[in-house]
Length: 431
Image (cartoon, rainbow, N blue to C red; front, side):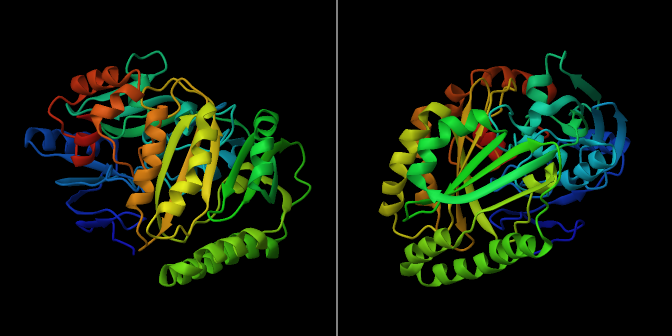
């Protein structure tokens, strides 16, 4: 479903969140200031919206929806510091960086999000020497509820709140990122038994730049993905193999398999077993963002939980029993990623090495008992839900998980005392 940008009706990418609201589409920072000022004076609310890739209601507007798609231009490139307007998509950012011999040090597995949306929800990739994408931010420019333009850099007291700000503090209009020289990745992907993956993790994670794996429910099979920096792009993936694996099999065929599983749930364990064993190993080199990011056209709903890395074995041990107990079948593999700590107050990885567990369900398939079951496993371990992925937490039980939670709320009280930028989701998770 594609919703026109000037439509009052909006649906997110996962098609599980909808709203009807008046639309604001500023083309400059001055227009943002004028629209925020007018809204605050009229007692109205604004919710900024990026590309709609959050599954939570974080971007659901109940009064006015501000789209930032027209604020999508580069501002400056000064050495490794790159400033862009906050509505720029990651795909455009990656192209801009490549044209200047630069790259993001790490990325997630899609590049459809806006820069503002990605950092505000603490989007992440994998790699124990890396934290969230927000950890690359050196400064942000924010339009506050008073209509003032504020720039916060790493020396500003508000900085650790403003970067992963959940859209609760104001409208992000510019972001300065510290980038790195462009680099090539060697991708090594192979099917393995889950037992072998788990046995090797503690060796592979510190020895490689980026490690993740997928486990196929109802099987003992997994798929391991390791990316390492190399000096030479000497093993490009043939175009046919790239199309076959990343387009035809991962999207067209996988969607067909999911539709079969949705209609005939009893065959899902067999389908998962066939899918896991049909995978073939591959090794190739590529420009970093081309290796990190791939197309995702199969629609789904998702929950992702961060837990302390040391707690991962407890969750992995319990997951098969949880899945077997469900009154429906799980069609998607479970994804596991790993990051290092950062110092941003509402970042999932604040202050610790993290393991992430992401669970998905195909569009139209029940998910709530599955997601609540994972949450019940992770919350007692100090788990923190991804702000852009479905979860059921509230301010009351999130506060103990974030040591600087009340400090964030104090910044919010200063910058948006009248709650111009709130919505029902923020009321639930922030109070």
